[in-house]
Amino acid sequence: MVRMSADERRESVIRAATVEFARGGYYGTSTEAIARRVGVSQPYLFRLFPGKKAIFLAAAARCLENTRKVFEAAVEGLEGEEALHAMAEAYTRLIAEDPDNLQMQMQTYVAVGAAEAAGDHEFGEMVRAGWLEIWDTARLALGADDEETATFMGHGMLINSLAAMGFRSDHRVWQGLFISARVKREAGA
Amino acid sequence: MVRMSADERRESVIRAATVEFARGGYYGTSTEAIARRVGVSQPYLFRLFPGKKAIFLAAAARCLENTRKVFEAAVEGLEGEEALHAMAEAYTRLIAEDPDNLQMQMQTYVAVGAAEAAGDHEFGEMVRAGWLEIWDTARLALGADDEETATFMGHGMLINSLAAMGFRSDHRVWQGLFISARVKREAGA
DNA sequence: CAGCTAAGTTAGTGGCCAATTACTAACTAC
DNA sequence: GTAGTTAGTAATTGGCCACTAACTTAGCTG
Image: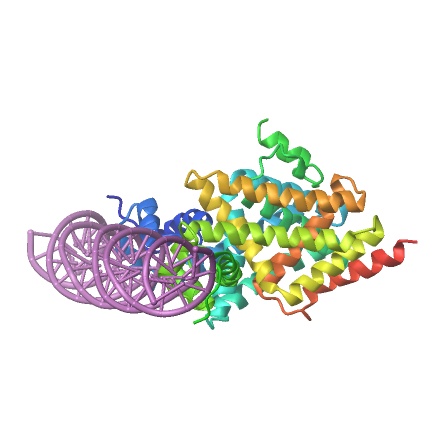
């Protein structure tokens, strides 16, 4: 048994929860599974977080934050066409290195629907705010108008969807994407 | 009590299931909820379908089929810019008239992840095949290459994501999408 | 080392939910 | 009208899961 500070444990929980929630979504993931991945007993999660919802929320927020940071780091000092390529490459690397982050993004989007339907608007607000930050980061770096930004973000959403559906990286649907060449290279084909 | 043929009931179940699954996803939706919406007892669902999975599968397949048909109907007799505008308009109408269809699409995509992780590749195959049909329908009607098709489908995925996240239709993130359709129409000359 | 605090665990509980079993009511053809 | 079929329900069960309560162990500090 490795003892850890509560804050450190919470970090581990968020990472483990991201992996599990990415696959099963909110309802399809048991706290048991998260605890097992962390390496602690299941009830201990409820010391670290007030409930399952709070764990999902923390993981979702972290996921959006990660994506934003990846973009921000990529475009530092760049603009226009260069920024676009930098963000595209950074997102490509994110697919390869952390596919769970992508899947968790999708799970986050989808979870908003259930939350809103259940009368919880706070979660949706958080997600929309986080997503807007990413949108604005891209828009600013590209120096783009709404249409160009929409096209860029659309490509990102398409990538998320294709990855979620499990299209292999050598499938023809990946061909037209701005990152197709790099995806294939990194997939080691 | 209104009696109905088993086939008619199955249709009702698929429609009700689409609404419920769209909100809660697979695990977040109880067969009880579906049955209540249909107006039959919960155990009767298991006469009409072998299990919950089969209901979800039927709803997912129907959802993909609906979307494909909307596109096919929209582009009938058109091609190129005209086809693009027609599909964009048709999809926009689909958002307004049948938001559940959109949400169900997202739920379908994310459900593939869980299915594949659980060793079930059949569901993923069905989804990928259905989605490819839509892709090819668009590609053919547009007379487009991979890149243009990706951009078009990317806009569609962006719309799905924005709708799922609950962005109101007057929010600025929608601007680029609507403008896009108008500009492209004007640039068609 | 004694005593406090913070990090953990084991053992339960109540609620929900998919699926089964056994039954009942309504059409249809002769 | 009655025999057979098809549409439907009521009652139940076994399993999972979020969360609680009560208890234990590790580390720090004077």
